[in-house]
Length: 311
Image 1: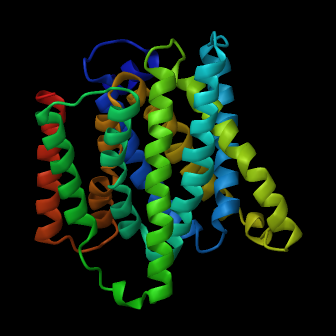
Image 2 (image 1 turned 60 degrees about the vertical axis):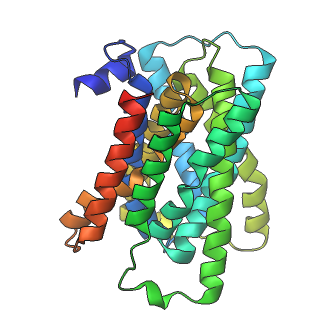
């Protein structure tokens, strides 16, 4: 708990602030993904993405006032990079992610998400000259193998997906991974050598992500695709607020903290370990966890250890 306070209060107690923030974000996204999977059966992805974004913006604004963080000194280039990162990573990326979950489930969608770290590392090496040593690359690859080993396990209901659903899921999942990688590199470029606090960076990205959704929502409204009846349910509203608090408000805040203090390839790798945190949730929900799943967790933890201790 002390580590969490150190991250949010900016007390440099640990040399691994970025890595710890990334793992905390991954854990929160695991919780939120379970809730979004249930909500996605009742609310379309576009509508759900807009709702969680608005809720998170309100929470971030309140937090800024409570913490009395003054408006940061900005230049046009970092601000533009953050806004573009929000448009790509949150507006389009999260929309594709939610659509992928609806198409072929959370585990397969998270598997597609493991493509983001190597994409991020390659893009960051090309455009940001962030050179990773052999140990870091081994850690990235080992973590990806472990996560993939967990999420590719055949599920009892996996045969119920049609080829069309699988194709749509793969397409949306790949789009989400690409958007996540590009958004992460853009954020890293904006935050690495500036004094912009992660809290403000999160707010800028979310505002941009929500604004890009508004024209799409308007078009859906004109075509009669907006569902309002589900929003009259108190249970749905509370679930949406809870998921937005965990996965969007805290998750993106911690994500920006990780990206600011850690090379983009390492940060995105640790941020993609959400499937590992789903394992305890699955046990609590009465699901049987196989030896293969446990082995995948061990492999991924070994990769994370390399990122922490051998970078």
